[in-house]
Image 1 (cartoon, helix red, strand yellow):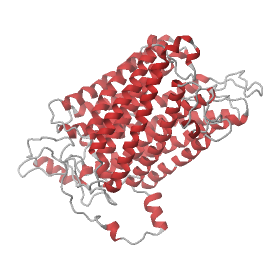
Image 2 (tube, helix red, strand yellow; image 1 turned 180 degrees about the horizontal axis):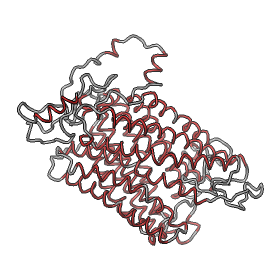
Image 3 (cartoon, rainbow, N blue to C red; image 1 turned 90 degrees about the vertical axis):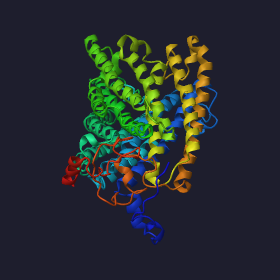
Image 4 (cartoon, rainbow, N blue to C red; image 1 turned 30 degrees about the horizontal axis):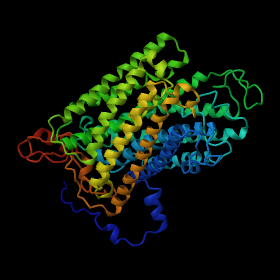
Length: 606
């Protein structure tokens, strides 16, 4: 459904404008300080890297389905040193770079960078971010990371092949010649720039949300999307400095042979024994102190976005708003004390392992609050099965599967047996693809009208959802069965061992599903770019939603709003008895004689 377009001062301005000088074009669309332009820059950059990460994943799957038979297309695209054929070392590079690209160049920047930048000022009623120049720099500091990671594919020895976790001693003594170490060094430098960019963004987001809310917008009137972004910014601000410091230490170990992580007696590149004396396990503690909170950095904003989408299309208030806020805070708090569950195999003291195990299991409690509240919101609602709603509901179901498999891994005795199997691969992809990526797709379809003033095609959006859902589960649910059978991850040729030869057919089925899932994203890409230019135009509030961004023109002009928004209620007043409509926007004043106290308070703040 759609509401009639509301005339605004920005309509027709572009058509009447003369040709834009190059300097003004660069300032407006390239080195822009407008949060909306920066958000779209993040969006298109991350979607480009999504293609790269997907190709890397398909190359991994090809090797496991057709071992040593070459990759006629993907192999050439990925610069294999042996043409079509790959080597075990190249296979190790494939899964290292797949995970690195998807985590650091896609999921984190598309949530915090793209959606955070575009939505935060609009949803709190601000005209821009608190620090526009810092915001612009947070995007352009990502470009050295993009360039360095791209160059790493071409240097002698290839890109990083130490795993996306970069564990020493492999990451500090990799290869037989100094030239082969260049890829890992570039990997470290690229992640340093990613970390600096994220810290810039986190400071901006926290300041904007705390200081720049519209009159009447209290913290407990914020949409869940903003709560997810706010808690994510807090996690980044406290966890990223630890990882950045660890990356600098690894860089020093690699370049000037300091001894932070190099164990004593390690032979470096056949050149002799290094001074050493460092602790490889220190890297694991520093890395996971960031990277486990990073799991929630990669899911909390999507949880908030899904909450807003589900409430909107169920036409019901979000069930248990305050428990949802407290649960998202609880997940973040517990996320800082559970990093050791990634290290159960490291030989830690059993008492310490038990502490990490219990605290990890406790994360299921706030996660269950969110899950049951989503289901309660759906219960009895007038559900509209739009494309964003389909992706949001699939997010909930896939998150449940990923979360339940995570409880298995939280138990130390079980994790010891499944840690290096495909059960772990299935778990993380259910959380980060079936969860986060499906939430991102839902967010793109939901906020696309606000970004571009046009609607995406609903029919092709539903085709995209249905095929993605089928192929996703065919790919990753089957990996649980592989993992239960002990199939190892990170090996280029597990079939060398007779134990796993009977699983070749299952791997081929997974690869066919993965190829199908990759092909389906072409539908999304065509729908996205066609709709940007040819999609049907829409009004300000085509979904009849309640939060403040739908008050702004579509797309918003400079300054976002043509009137100062004033907030009178929370963002989830759907099917309210106070109005004849099934939605009650935050900016709509209460009827005469009702809600005088709220109205007076909002006016006083204004």
